[in-house]
Figure 1 (spheres, rainbow, N blue to C red):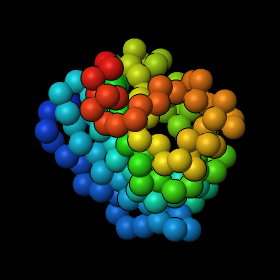
Figure 2: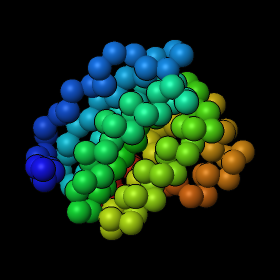
Figure 3: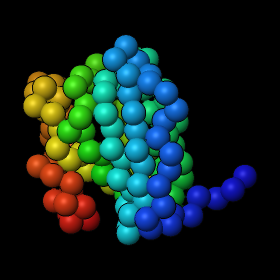
Length: 133
């Protein structure tokens, strides 16, 4: 099995094809000291699995540091929330972190209604999330 070695500036290909009712696209970009995960579409029961597959490789790092850009995520259901909590816990267990940047207003309301805004670090933009390492 190959060990994951982060390479700054290396991009992983987007998720193949749309997933979920309204589709999901994921761009993963390895940056200096962290991985930027840009998610577009809906994180729901149907798309959570493919998103998890795209993120798993980043969690193989000994100290996973992730920034999720959720500006273009229009909906998150309970499965999607569970996925975010799982990624957060796995990152912290590995000595890393998960920062959430630019959540869509609807997604932010869902995070606030479920009190998950207290668990996650939410940032108004990607540079702020990247800077708060």
